[in-house]
Length: 157
Length: 253
Image (cartoon, rainbow over all chains, first blue to last red):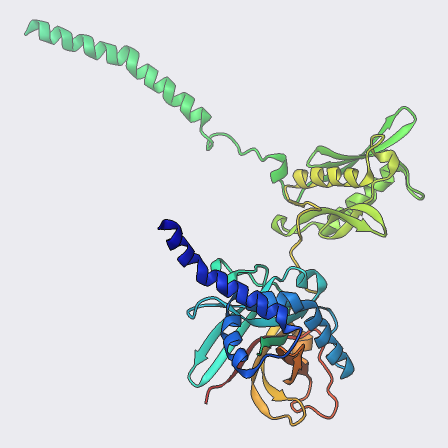
């Protein structure tokens, strides 16, 4: 009976993880249908965003740099793609990814970009702070000086 | 009643003859030992600015130059360089060190590489390069530089930055922020605002941030922010290098 209860507790997260992995593995093979896209969008709002970002980080970084190079506006300095992690009243969670840019010694320290949402009247703002931890929502945030955001990346299904 | 008076007299005598002189002696001893009575004695490392001296010794046929900080021998040089004797090398070290003397909390001693040589650094300026003849046989020059740097930092009472300790990043010039409009690539339509950050001379040039949108790898929508030195992008745009975005904002409709 106890085993049955444990199974019931573990089944939904296990299914969600299996679903995410399946979605990621299948992503490279074919484009999803609109209905599949709706379901996957919700699923990807969780930790799967980070998995996707880390899986494609190098390709995204190179893709952005190549695009800028073609337009003659390439970046001087080191670049890197890291997850954006929401911090603040609205709670944690991944909010896409960012390409950060700056001196190589500083960019190497960056593990994530902490996103703070700010609202002032009709204006909505997002502060994007490169940080040296992968989970800035859990503790004290220390920004990495000299590094900024060059591109904001969102997963769209 | 008589007995009572006698007891009182004895007690008065004891107080007068024993307890009072004892208390006086104790007070004298405490007074002598109190810090206010003795002139303050500064520890060697508390003297600031430090006293720097050079001493020349002869060990057999070998000339030895000594660097003394506040009277304490910190470094001994035994090897001549191409141009200087060990004593002359120490004289140069003292001249270089005097140039680096600042308030104590603004000084640090470290080791590093200059032109491929392990050196002792004071405030990031090269002070001294150990030569093979300066060090005990078998000691690596990197280790020798570290030992000297630690000894010098200790004698001066300043911070020693270990080579393993990550040094705080210092930009070449101060960084500052600025808020500029975000404009779309092509039409130049204003679509929001961005806070940019970078070296102050570069940030002053930035007039706007161009937003370029692209879709990559089928799954990702990318918004690229390019700081530019004009308010409206032309057919070609020129990036202001060294500047990047630290916040974006838009109008909620």
